[in-house]
Image: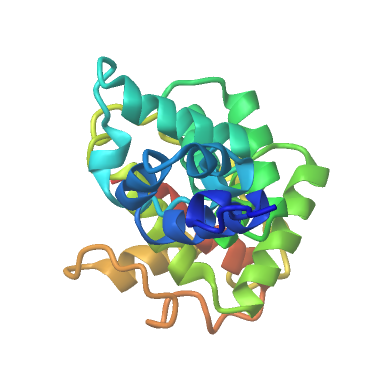
Amino acid sequence: MYRPTGPANLPHDVWTLIAGRTAAQSVRDLCSLRMSCTAARNAGDEDSVYRCANIPIWDQRWWSVSPIHHPGRNFLARCRQSGHVKVLFRSAVSDLFLGGCRFAGMETMHVVAAHGHAAAQYIVAMMLMLRDDADSKNNGLQTFRGLEAAGALTNCKLVFRGVVQGTWRHLRRVPMLNEENQLCSSHACPTRGNMGAIYRHQRYGRGWDVNDGDGGAAHIPCVHCRADYELILFVHLFD
């Protein structure tokens, strides 16, 4: 018996692969593909396809969708439901610093960090080191050391700064930094308590710079002091 062999009769797995690759290139093209036939529409609704969607994290047009623009908001909601890492990261940042539920934001940030998202790992490290209890500080310090060793700190700050700036400029909930947050507690450490002065000296007359290799605290042997310096940089990301 003759069976049609046109594109609409391709196996569902093949359609899902096509839809995923299309989503990774262009969301507009994905929408066009889904309208082409029932098989494409069904495949395009798979979680794996939404997780591939190419959504630029810095493009404010995606993240400032009007409440009445239901298609855009629904698409982002579906991406979040599917586990789209960039959308989850953006959502977690919103909950943590824009005014949502901080607990939910931190939980989501941990989930994104567990997927290997370096900027999420950075935020988790900073927020843990800003806490008062020793266990949280130590856990944050270990994550910070891993990112520092990988040379990932600069890129993490660039990604995070690209999110918190722009449309959220006047809506941010800024984390607080004070002497109680200080990680270095060794009275024998010659650089203890001097990170603020080093920061002001490095930045004087130059404005803010995300480059970690510009002579800031990279030369300091005390990892706790380097973490204290990084916390200063983190707080100034909100300037």
